[in-house]
Image (cartoon, rainbow, N blue to C red; front, side, top):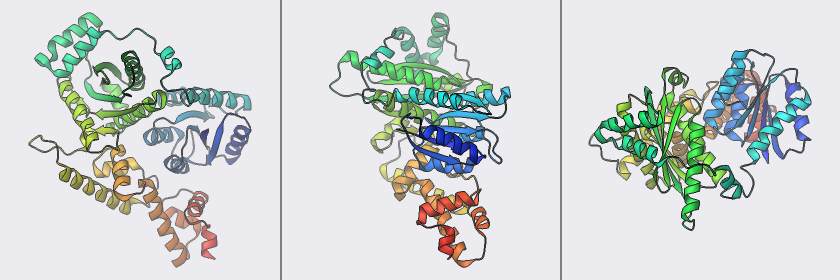
Length: 437
């Protein structure tokens, strides 16, 4: 069953699309409706959403900005954009952000149904009980295996032999592969393959994972995939100046999103667990061996944190003597990170539009790692903690002041009193007006 979030500042459009989809027989579970992007973000943070249907122009935060935030929260969420504008720039930006369709208002029922059906059918291919390693997977990936000579050269490049000069020259000469960058990063993936699998099946799954990695990372940058072992692979990413600029002000968010999306897609399509290591992004091809080493080092933290799967090198404070932090040092680092995050939240929870990524920036770790640490150390989801603070303060204001509901909503970070009322009732089981009485 798929859950859908519909976002439009015109309630009648939300209701119309919802009613149409509810009786469509498309295997839809929950349908959520939001009337601005801030409301939509709450649903994305707190509910399982598979498909986002969003308008573009919605006031303070546009649908395109919502798409960017949605990809950071849940990279695998599919999106359909609806708009009253046929502007090429809007459509181009929406497609670049991963929109599966761009529908122009006024909408026809057939148009919406066909678009939603296509997206859900495509997503449903990986939801079937037999969608893991099966004849279908074998059919999808029965292709010519990547040239071992090319992979060997990429491994030489990663190892930094002779500065990688000879490997780079051979890659350019034999395969037309040039490392232009100038920005580079490396991702490593260790597949958790079942012991009972034969060699052919193991190779096939490794190849399928390499294809998934190439498809995901090849959007917005050049990606080169190579095997690093019988159940492991690497991806060398490179961005030119314009591609690098398009990553936005916080480049690590995009890399973090890619790593989580890669892990999620391998698990969903191949039914395999995987450990993903992410390097930093550095300028200059001479850093490629160092980046590969960083990604490998990051992934090794799975031994210390076995309930986590995606590791970014920059999340760990490496000592000056280059040894990996001890268990005690790591625990101290993590406690300090969570305490810093809690302080940041207490200082900013009333801010409209506060996001996990802003809190992560304020605590100097990736959003993925902060989310993991916060839940591990406090037992609660980070956004649930934000909501709890907002609800406690709103309850105090309701009981101790004569402020109106819209004034209280604004003071605790909500864009609309209606949405504030929904969140309050969900948290306390009664509405603000019932509490006031």
